[in-house]
Image (cartoon, rainbow, N blue to C red; front, side, top):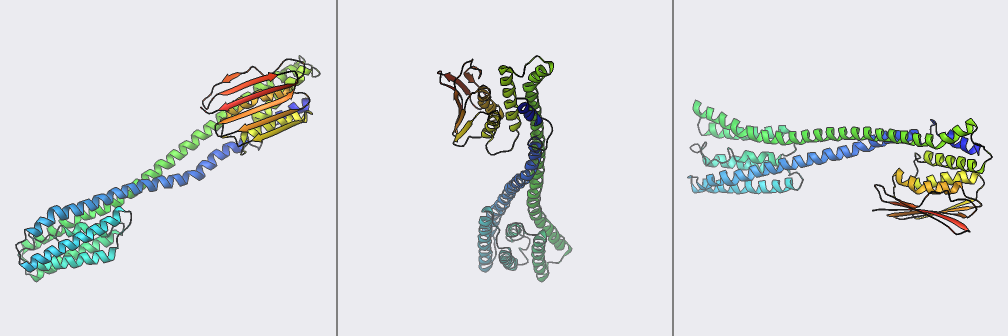
Length: 409
């Protein structure tokens, strides 16, 4: 009896066993798994921000092309040839915008080089068609309308590509200005203002969309990392509190019995004292087993209680049917405590049966009946946050039967 109680108490103190790794697993597992969700959350936020920027860019380009460029083409007072060139250029640009927009809205990227070359050809054709008289007029819709399609075809490409395309657009316009002799200081100043005005906004949209996606990703990654650290801290605090609560239970289980033995108030030869010592040792083993990292904690804790009974000479059989679901520690305690008490009073032999399903776990103990009161505790139902635990006892003069039953509510 004293050997069993001492062996159980040996596991209560600091040891390199389950209790220490339990806290280490909280930090390590949280850190290892935290990076993947953080990357996933940051990527999701960045994708959402990038999609919003794509929608904005496509909407601006096509709305401008319909609301501003189309009336300009319809109201152009140029020759029939020039009008045909302006209309054809408008249609080709609209086709490029639709093709690029569909790619962007589906999450892909358009073929930048080919579509950019098509836009430059349209740019040359429109500037050549309008001539010097309408170079700065509304009929030259390429001035302010064509540049909105540059960000679409160059989306997610380096910004230098956009600057190069805008530079080519300005060079085409300058070539037409010089070729048509529109070189008065006022005309050159107007040219410079046009180039600056039509270039600044597309650059802002292009750079802003990329910047917002990057900023959203960084902020989401920072927030996810902060939450992961906070989750690790909370998990560590919870593990520490559970360890303190378990140590308090262990101390309360053995302290009274050990104090009585030390003071000489309890006789080790007394069967009742021996039974209480066996019960205390069994509970200590079960409490220690709670911190072990095993696939099936309930069966592991039952085996820990049964092991002590076997060491005391009681033949015991443990039968498990089904796989128990994940149960909180409190539920497992309520399932095993009555059986632990009954095992401490068992005589002859014992059989423990565990029948488990996704929503119900039944644990029963059968032992031969013998003279003396039933010390396994009163029957009843103990409610908890995961569902009630029912406790039942029966005896018929031949066997004693104790059962605990948990079912999900």
